[in-house]
Image (cartoon, rainbow, N blue to C red; front, side, top):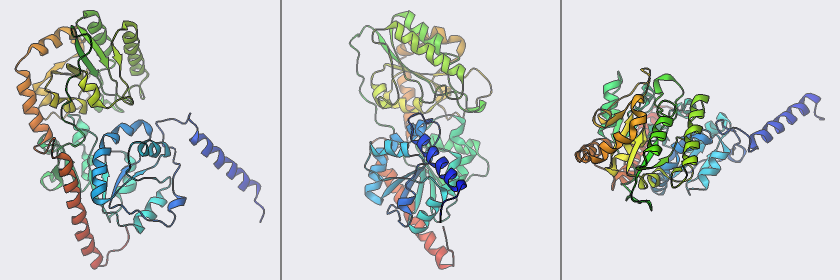
Amino acid sequence: MRPTLHGLRRRAQSAGIRAVRRSRFFPRSMIDRIGDDAAFADRRLDARVIVFFPGPPDQLYQLLPWLPTLEALDAAHGVAVVCQDSRVAAAIRERTRVPVVTFARYGALDGVIGRSDVALALYVGHASANFECLRFASLLHAYIGHGDSDKGVSASNQLKAYDAVLAPGQAAIDRIVARLMRFDAERRCIVVGQPTTLSAPPLTRSADRQRTTVLYAPTWEGAQPSVAYSSVLTHGPALVDGLLADGRYRVLYRPHPLTGVTSGDYAGADAAIRAAIRQAGGDHRVLAADDEPLEASFARADVLVSDVSAVATAWLPSLRPLVVTAPAGPASVTADSGMLARVRRLPPAEARSAAAVLAEELADTGGRAVLEELVAYYLSPYWPDRAMERFVTVCGELIGERDRLRAALVAGGATGT
């Protein structure tokens, strides 16, 4: 049967769409939906655990710190990372031996889950596309996040979608209990430590020992007012200009990978900060998140200035001075578990005076004791030496629980996924 003109047109359009999606110009903020669907038309996954990651390339920062832990979990139980973007899958494959598959169509995932014996699904973010996997009743679903912070989203009502929340420490559980209604934290929350946060790296001094190294690592502007914690626009240019002019500080600027994606104003402020650092020259630097892990940036710095974000929590083990910016507007919602009330805050009006503020913090000998208490509260008794082992053990327990519960449901007549 000869193809119709309409059929030929549709094939040409499909080929054109595929070519655009494979192009290096295809936006990093969109998923390309180029998948392994055909290769898995009648295949199954051997893994007992999947990590469902439907995000585009510019969200890879959420998953990459988990890869060493996922390798340990893969050795114990078998893991597969499930993506919806071929570029994401390629980037993960370059960094790990954990199997990675990409499903462009929801139907392909449905078929594979139906043929496989996957027991547990893990999630590193609250993407709305998570519900494409959360609907499967044959699995248990656990939220592991991508860093613990006092952002309001850390105690989001979205946590109710998961069977379990694997929490870094008691601070995370107390934060959830204080904010969520009708949520059984005692049953759902399990403390595992935070295997993505390494023990404090030793300080790597710059060649110029006469100056103190400041790491300014702000978060992005957020997609809505309640999560607008970024200081890039409200503090950044004045803060960096003041530090550069003071002369006592070496400035390292490490912006969040998503800075400026939703706001031209934030993109402009980011560009101004970068330009100021380039103009200052010397050993002042802009550090890209893609170029080195966060711990490597920490190892360069004597003191951190960050926003309300997981960067502040990850810095705690260094026991070095920490200053957290205060958002300019009243709309942003925080869920303070104690850190924000105990560390130095920097409002926008004091940004230009940051050099003096940092000097005070560096001279405060009592600050170390506060940070030690916060480490114990935020990072749990399993951190750092037993966090990875604890995570693998808890996942194994969830797999065993799922198998028992599923067997009982099947015995009672349950079918399907």
